[in-house]
Length: 233
Image: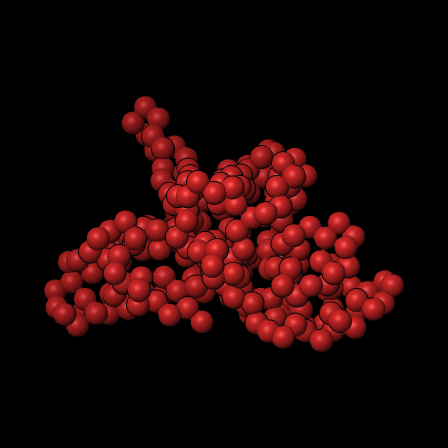
């Protein structure tokens, strides 16, 4: 999860639809604006260009029309994450999560994202993801708990979806690690600069799974200062 600010003002159709007894928040232009604001990524798992998209209410509206039609409460989410979040909230009753559209929530810095491959009898087995809260704060703790369920799965079907998701994350992280290695072994300053540009492009907010990549960079003292050069739009 990374910071992705919402554009303003809200689409005009939301106010019009709110006045109707059977109005819909899925009115013309809402999905496209959300796609642009969230860089065509699910705001929870950060998968790029998901093929199954939900317009999600960050805070469950429960029939409250203010929450139902609030532009600030509408988020771009994949079906996998939306379903897991809904089940998780119905089970835990936790609704006060970190909001990636609010800069003060510092979503980029308050959780540690780890991914790797476990071994069994000397053989590589399956990918694992572990997200650790870095602050003793209920909102951070609950958000990390939800994200772990998203990347691990809960039911048999969701576990398969989560395993497929971890495959994609691991490929992206390995590509970044490969670029870092090429940067370190570059034979000239010009080639090194090109490698850095490739790395920096993968740390931007529109890149898939940016949180994992930035976390990897943050842990390397040689590269951590690069994060201050990122200018997310």
